[in-house]
Length: 258
Image (cartoon, rainbow, N blue to C red; front, side, top):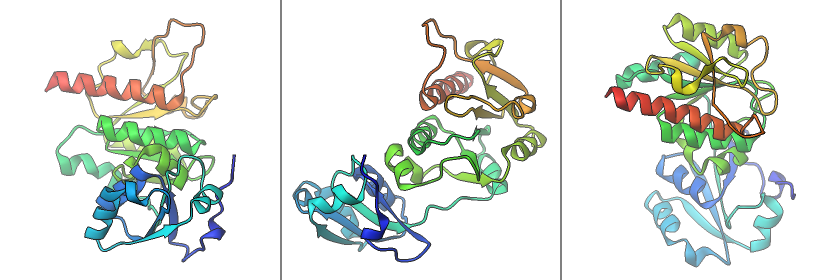
């Protein structure tokens, strides 16, 4: 796999980064993210009128680059589109936890316990946007960040889901519990099946890392542990797939209540 080399296109400062792929760039435009410039492959620019049009509406510079530039600079799936954007920031946890109050909605958060693959983080962001999760909490170490690769995997959902980065998710879980939020841990060894739980109250869904699941020090901080019933010989799912199953069961129950 080719390595993305930021130095080939230059750094304009510590607050700038590159994202790539058609949907991530389109959603960055639509979300109003600060975009310095957009590069489009010479072999594709005539197939991207929507992107070029929307960039023009925001007076964002669109320049043509040779196809091999994208191949040597970004990972596969770049689609001949890249944008230099402002760095995607995190919000303070207090602001994150206040979001449901401003919307007059029942709180629904996700806490990621050391998810390290940026593609999984991106896929979870996409699930979060679709399922109405108010925000995600990640840890500042041993965790994937809001990188270009996560942006690509999220198909642009990274622009719409607030993320708080904390030094220790266990402290964040205690703070959420103090606000009356039920902490629901996901664990394959849990006694409770997902379908049997009432998940309509304010809650935070805690998702364990790839391969290892929830850490032993995190499990005691959960109010309840739940699992997905599975009939096959394998007892695990990809973390983003599992997050989708949990999140949409919560969404289903809340729609029923409405």
